[in-house]
Length: 343
Image (cartoon, rainbow, N blue to C red):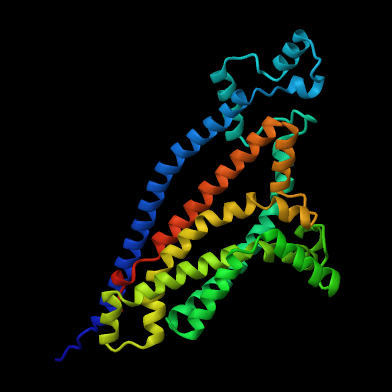
């Protein structure tokens, strides 16, 4: 009687794939634990400093509501209504527990709920910033990859010159040019305003955010292209890439399986700071395109001396930075170095 030997290669491959999956999951969980251990203390310290700014500012809701000629008794009465007569740590604890429940307090100017005010502006800014980031990632990855595949060539020099030029162009100048050409001149896009996605649908929503997103995306395009180009060129010089070439792998497989994963780290790390900056640093762009966004709300609140609103803006900005960097770290952990991947 003869017996047929069972194929062991597929079983080994399945076992190797399962081991790599467990290794990747472990790396992601370890990165999550490290990130949380870092970001939680950072958030606590940042919120404490943010709250302390109110005491250092010397501003008071009584001065805003009653004017400079208010009597000490009237000032004390108003400050007591806002809980400012309590000890500093008691005020901080009341405020911080409210922050943990999503309650950022009330505006000193009009008494409106700050969480709702920020939510209205944040929806606009997140839409523009997300689209700007998408444009920056797609264009930056394309330009950086093309330049890296032909280093020191005329194409590489052209890409380098292009990203250098767009990196020094102010967003408000680009915004004015875009409005003049595509909105006023050609009439392809609205020149101002915003239509929420839930109200007008994707068409009007995209039409209103395209030009401001383009104006904000140029800096992202330049940074991503430069970082990716440099990291890809360096990845091509790594020993594991040389080994893949010696083993006879094709250029496409070498690029997508070894070079690109090994070179993505720097470009992705750049995005960790870019997205929160796009959300918070778009005041001028929002003015140009008539958007009532997060940046404009922050500017108006600061000029009015509305300290609780400014504190709410800072807390949301800190949360955005922490959350987005956590996502970037998890993505970086998921992308195993090419030298650790199987061929």
